Length: 192
Image 1 (cartoon, one colour):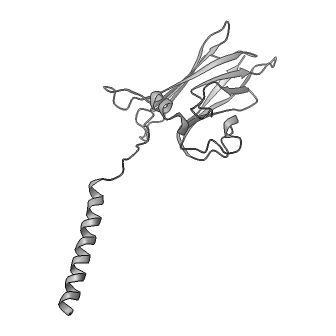
Image 2: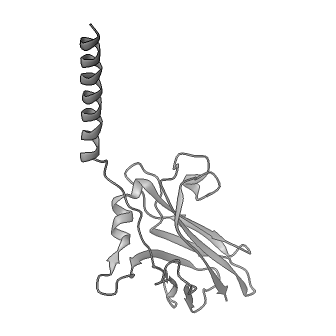
Image 3: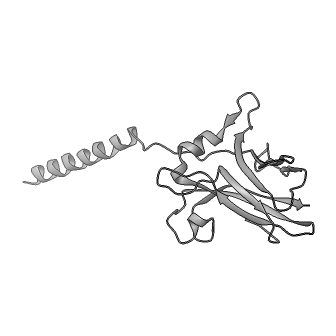
């Protein structure tokens, strides 16, 4: 009887080891996060005026060098700008990858948030994902109608795997969005 008991336990144990080891052959696919070294925001005025470009480039990622942040020109008072965003991975100069395409393909998992300090203006989304939630690769910026020049920060933040149904998120409020920040930069802009 003892022999049968030991034989049964040995058989059961070996079955468990075999069953467990087969899981290691088929691990779940890993969804790697995007590497974004460069974000370029182009603001084109409706009607006449100069296009303004905001760019951040950080080719060494978390390395010792700070990102190179540039703003070309000033925004005009009481003007509507059509905005667009291009995201690149330039970490390998021989193989630059357009991350904008990945964000578009996974638009239901991504959203840009734009904040402006000093009441510089308001931003409205111009693109939607398949669930009619905003994405923010395309947007419009309406600058203030003040009579005096002003300066402030234009901050662009891309969130990944956020809760687009949370309160205020579809209106551009990042407070309840959750998720992870893929890239965020604040640009000093002047309105004249």
